[in-house]
Length: 275
Image (cartoon, rainbow, N blue to C red):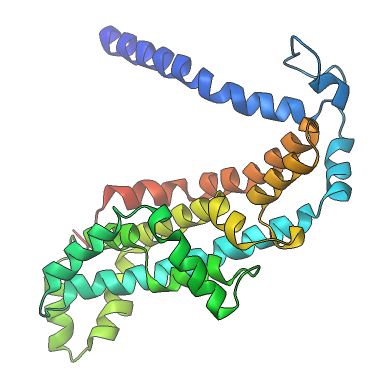
């Protein structure tokens, strides 16, 4: 027992030491968000502010349309999460429950699309969305999510494969069609993985930078990430405001993770069905 406790203590110390370099930038960001502009220019830099300037946050709202940035980010993150959950679960169900010609080939083709870098399709996509008149709108940043995401389809399919096919056979005997099998059997058994997919999509969309940079031109239409980049370019050196915005931007993701972490663990375990 003593040996087990000693191993646990050593493992805890190693994890704590490894966590310090990851925590320090986060602490530095929060600390800088309360500094005055002159304190951010001090060299060597002070880790903690001499006086706390809570006004940085209120002044930030007057300096840039950060409220609009937050609303745009929330809208895009929610719409992308809904779109990916719906489309990925439907396509994954088709690959698991249906038997059709070239199913394996199409699934392989789907996986191949994950290897295509965004830079290879960036210009064709821009031309397409420009043809639709969607440039400087939010449409290019959420509409494609309703047409599936290759990795999430693969992720959900792997979970669906753990659900026993006896459920499908029993449902067919009772006269259920595939749509009823999907939303009455597969969906209720797949809440953990669907929540995980939604949360991962929400975080990825919230932190997405390149898309808003390409399609959005008006400051009020930007997301929180692209907006903070815009702020750093317009107000070079105003790091106290930039760090205040970054602190506000990261809070929703942390809160969301703390609320849904048990669903994430259950989803990643990929346990389906009823024992």
